[in-house]
Length: 335
View 1 (cartoon, helix red, strand yellow):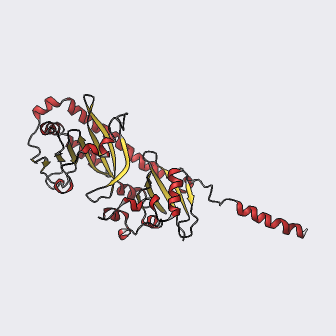
View 2 (tube, one colour):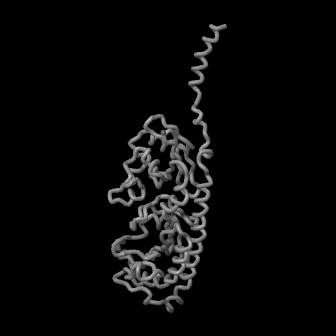
View 3 (cartoon, helix red, strand yellow):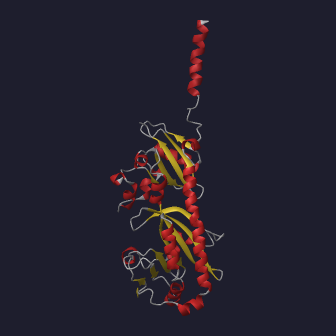
């Protein structure tokens, strides 16, 4: 009897060693509270309704273009070339208004600017109503740009650019947005005013059936992260569908073998002159395990990844956003 027990014992050891880790079948929803994402997206969804309201106001003005031109206050803005001369310190009621050099008809562009002057008050209301809003704006096919609140246009804007070449414009056109509704642009950009990553919601504006312009509401991603992730226990990342790190805890970012963060703060790193987003992309990590994690979560749509390398975190758990093509990732970092 003793011999049979000794013979069976190594077989049991073999089969037990072949069993998957207790974490291999874990449901990421048990690790990450999905209500975090739902709450975040609920706040963002309110802006869908807001930008539709703004669209209705602009299209009403355009429908009454001729009558409004007769009543327009031509002295509301003073221009030097195509740039309004007001500064952020002059008035908290004015936008920065620009007619870019790329316009083919300056007079027509000026008419569009005059007709839409009353949008300043609507932009101001939206900006003050939502604390996460960084700016509200409209860019038009005739190269008029109105942005609230006002900014240092002389130092921050290239007057020769063509607004229709940027994703915050063309992502809302009929080719990219045949439904003509609100569009969230998942690809964030670095704010030149130093507020870190900016997320944009855009909506097309039509005049007599033709695209006249695109409204936009920009969100400061850092404010979103502070509000919803800063007080959470654990190490979190938000990445987009390209693997770019949108935000997260310094400990989480540094655990994935990325370059050291400036003062251990990702936002400060983003604002540095030598920042390159490619240096903070999961697929570009020097750690092969991190690249494998990115492949599993983003490309293969898996809910978790277990690291094998003892110098990497122990595990990563991911939950996708619904509104945006983003992922919330929680890391279990080895102690």
